[in-house]
Image (cartoon, rainbow, N blue to C red; front, side):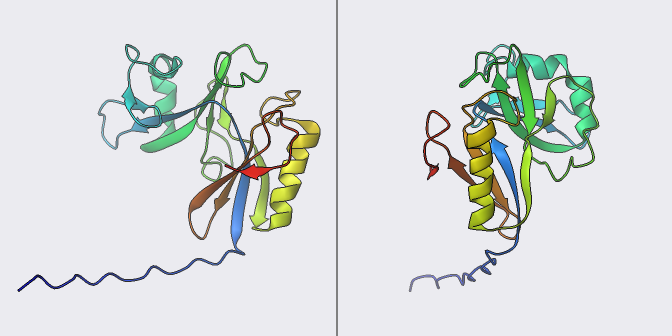
Amino acid sequence: MSEPVPFEAFDKIPRLRRGCVITEKIDGTNAQVYIPEDDGPMLIDSRNRWITPADDNYGFARWATENEAALRLLGPGRHFGEWWGAGIQRRYGVAEKRFSLFNTTRWKDGLPCNLPNVATTPVLYEGEFSDTAVADCLAGLRDVGSVAAPGFMQPEGIVVFHVASRSLYKVTLGGDGHKEARGK
């Protein structure tokens, strides 16, 4: 006799018309700093692997290691962000590399570490989700360019964090920053 099929509950469906945070999507490389609860070693990663200064991703591990004391002020946990700027993807017309943290809500009142070129991704809208809010944010980027790097007229697009579903969605502008928005 075969084993009984285990019961699997159907998840609640979150309501679409709930809060969201729309930020600028920065075109760089995904990065994470992991601070353990204890005094263990800080870990550094790219999107899909742990990295070290000897096996790096655009110099992020080297930079994070050099700035470990300040980064530990972020507190225990996983701190995801985008490592971008000079020599990475769109470059944004800046001479240095920057680290922009994704968790804008946590750091709404400012970051505890005082590192140059570290910030959160720019918040373009916070409120109830709507197609109009998405369209307005994209139009703003199309018209005035990047908020993260003022004067750069080829921003990548936006990221929508839907609070009720705790999900991220991206909408990109065309390759030149001025084409119609499209999902990617």
